Length: 428
Image 1 (cartoon, rainbow, N blue to C red):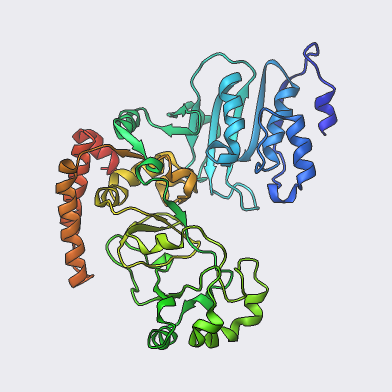
Image 2: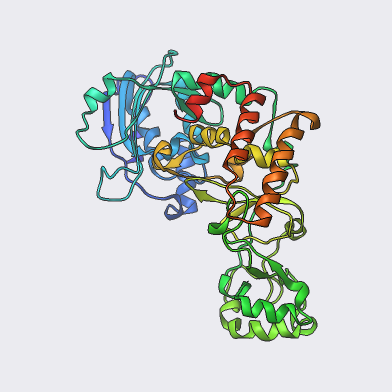
């Protein structure tokens, strides 16, 4: 396949049109040697974690003559994921991306894929890219679809954004006078612990109670399960974690905990994620940060909720934490404005406007713009957050919807949104 590319040069005509459905082969199956060959053949679009279909764009574009057309059916992941960065940059700088039809998770193939159709023309004249999100396959007519309304594609250096024209002003306001979350939180956006054996370290309540009444109590920490996380409370607050650290001598210092762990010894010994001894957790430079005030949230979800933790809870690798005591940050990330921003900005597994799941990992969250405001400007929001937290502490079932609406209203005002723009955010 790749010898064909090597046989073409600038003097040859190439093809008027190339149409294809490249194979989906995950990068983990390619092997390092093959990746190096691909990177050498296609240096402009190469990425060490790119799936194979990315390189088919390289060869397809090489096969085209000037003003030739490439039409590919591929995964839609290259549009926003990190591994598609080089391909997006090359396309934006040197080609005209005429149309993108995005099917999200709709089952257009028997295999489970998030498919898209991309039409590219081999010239670099500046022109608009039309983006067509497909909501349903019922009575789908691609000819009719592509003659109708489309969304606008903003091709930033890092990501492409797909927006209606009416969204652009809102995005500009969200970015105005801001700092990236990476700077706001001092780069403390951290992954939960990968234990290698949750059944040993996430404690049953009776076991936790026994350990808390023993010499091992200092190893027992409060724990938040990913699916228990809600904005102002946890579905189950009575969960615990056994924090054995990277090199703690549990056997000699904490005999009750050691005796408990012995039942898992064989499983713990064969883990890759372990520390100095079989009972220890993997190395982690930020164990102490779990003890600090922080926001915790599930990694992959439709509706992400951020919980303000002040009790030193531990989380596992299905969660992230932002080490910060900022109640304004907490309010913004739980606001309707951020939920709207997330749907526009971050790739979803499925249509983001119709319950598509998104992954809020480190590389996404560090770019989130946080308004640079004074403590005086934050104070009204902080007061409402405090009131809701105090109310929920007394009774977690208390309805605080009206107070949360007031927070949203203050955030809209802070970002200068008009009534019409608020209606767009709230999809009224």
